[in-house]
Image: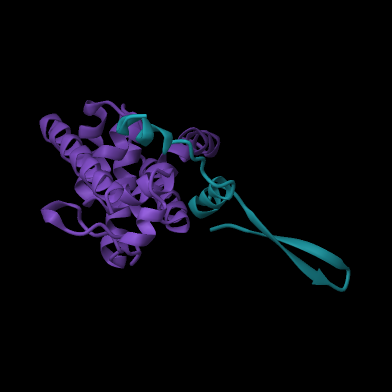
Amino acid sequence: MDAAGFEALVLEHQDGLYRFALRLTNCPHEAEDVAQEAFVRAWRWGAGGRAYPTYLRPWLYRITANVARNRVRRKQHPSAPLDGGSELRAGGAGPEALAASAETRCELAVCVASLPLRYREAVVLRHVEDLSYDEIASALGRPVGTVKSDVHRGLALLRAAISKEEYV
Amino acid sequence: MNLEDQLSALGDVSAPPTLRPSTLLAAGVADGYFPLDTPVGQLFVAYNA
């Protein structure tokens, strides 16, 4: 891939990779860095003389997920797991603050950001990025059945969290 | 609106305009420029990652 081809690739996929990174990191600046690093890794892959995968889109999401995982784990983003009856919180915001923003898209984004990373990745790729289960399986390196289970479990956790917030 | 539709609405986000140029610069496929005042006027110095 030459420079023009790489620029075309960035143009085509920048919105998707940025959105995905944003939902994983819950931070616009971090998301931009993650997307940039993912693209640069993709470029270096091709620059090393290796062929690009046939299914480019899931591969790019896979790189993005790997970059984001490393950063999220390293920085210990304030995302409390929703499973196990844990309290929903984001960035230290209390229940009152979250309840005040109920029914807003922002609240949903906060709930998504509070999902355990495993479910967050699957839910965002399926329902925000509209990838097929096969593409998600390829992107996340998990069997299709596991991906379906992760999406189902993630949605259940989200519903429980939203329902809980509505009654705060 | 059901949950799936609300999630889909989260996709209504675009990448910031700085992402493409910063990516191309970081990958080394584009040059960056910065202005430099000199005795003969302002020069633009190109650099590459």
